Length: 187
Image 1 (spheres, helix red, strand yellow):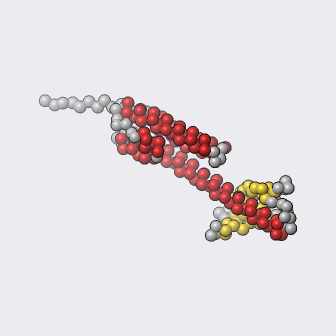
Image 2: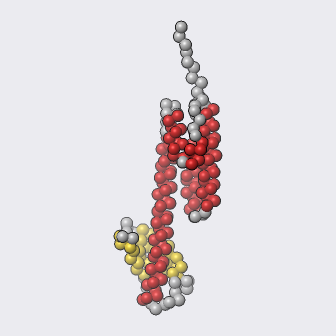
Image 3: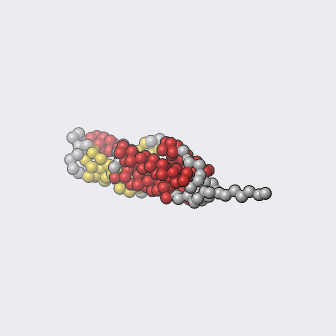
């Protein structure tokens, strides 16, 4: 007598896990408009937590072992790996590849923005020092520097806004060993 084993597992809906990739992109855009805002991070974490909860429920209702929700809230990549292991013969991992690519892209953009902000702040201090030493203007200070263009790997074209309302075009050159060289156009 032979017995037939019936597999009662259903197809898994991946919409929540795809939405996790979109959260990365929305998180990046929101951080761009509201930099250094803790609420952006909190909303992103909550959104991913809700998506993890619903996704784990969908996986379980399809007849598979439920992925660890806490793992998804604490460290989402491990949740995605666990999900891949659970569904390894059923689902192609395109969503995981998409999530990793959007995560890498958002980290790259965040790193680039942070680096440019640090370069602008350091350049502003040097602009104030150059104006004070070379133009004998102790009351003029640089308020901010904005990078306009990255001309090469080590040279940036920018402008400095001074406390007297003037704007001065500057060049910023990275010299290695965390040193920069700043040049001012006519003050």
